[in-house]
Length: 64
Image (tube, rainbow, N blue to C red; front, side, top):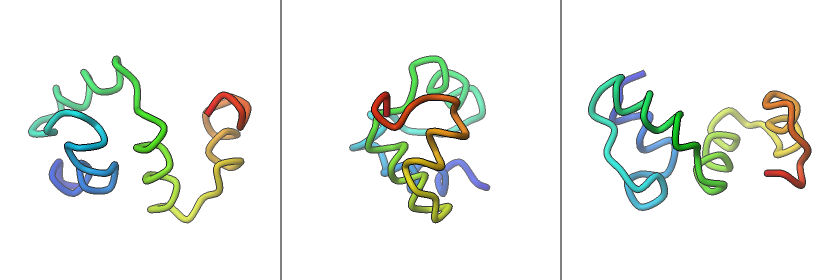
């Protein structure tokens, strides 16, 4: 997946608050963590429920 496409899937600069131009940008984003809106957008892209995302991340739905 191209960096621009991934940025759009997560909700764009407005949601993730930065531009993803390189793999290093992804590393920085992973260290900072995703916003709830970005995680919800990712779940929608994969047609996952929030419950399924919570299971994948080993957290409770309430944590999300």
